[in-house]
Length: 284
Image 1 (spheres, rainbow, N blue to C red):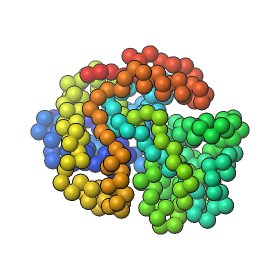
Image 2 (image 1 turned 30 degrees about the vertical axis):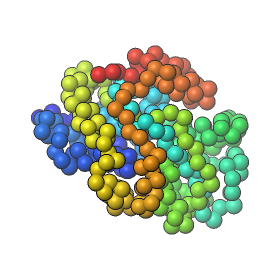
Image 3 (image 1 turned 135 degrees about the horizontal axis):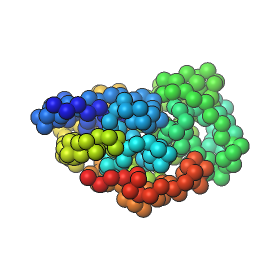
C-alpha cells in the first residue's frame, strides 16, 4: 500500500475528502491517504510541500501559484473549488473602525507571509486605491485563534478570512464584518510535489478520480447541509447560503487564469517575475 500525505484547511470546503476517507475509498485502491489539517492555511501548506512533510495540498490558488513561481517543487494538477472565495474583512466588535476606508494604514492580521490572508490584503488595498507601500502594515497571528486574540487585545486592527468560517465569531459578538472581498479567480486548487508526480503519477490520478466522483454530486448528498452545519458548527441557513454560492471543479487551471494570477501578483509587487504555464501546472 502506497502512503500519500495530503494537507488542507479544517473547513467545510474539504468535507468531501473526509467522506471519501471515511468510506475507505482510497484503501480500496491500495492507497493509504493520510489527511493533515493545516489551520495556518496556505502559507503553512506551502512550507510543508517544500519540506516534503506532505505530498499534496488543497490550497489557495494565488498562494500556491506564487510559491511555485518562487521555487516550490510542486505543480497544480486540478482546480478543486471553481467559485471565488468570499473573504470577510473583520474588525473587533467594539472597534471604532466602521468602513474599509478606515482601515487604510492600519495593522492587518495575517496568518503568515505568503498566506491567502496576506495576499488578499494587497488585493483589497488595490481595490480601494491605497498606496501599497505605506497603507499596509502586518501582524503575523498564525491562525484564526490567533486573529481572535490579536483583534480582541488591540494587537491588530483588521483581519481577512473566509466569510462563513468566521461568521460564528461575528455572531458571538467578537468580530464585526465590515465588508467582503471575493477572489478574482477560482479559490482552491490541488497541488502535488514533483517527486510524487514523477514516481507515482498514476496514484495521483486515482486520488483525483475518487475525490471528483464525490464533488461532482456533492450538493446531492442527502442532508449534506445538516452534516456540514453539525461538523463545522455553522448555522444551517449559513451553510445553505454557502452551498448556493459554491461550485466544485474537476478541471485543470487554464493558462489564461495562471497568467492573470501572476500578472496581478507582479502588479502588487508580491511576485518578481512570471513563470511559464508548464512550470506551474501539470495536466495528468
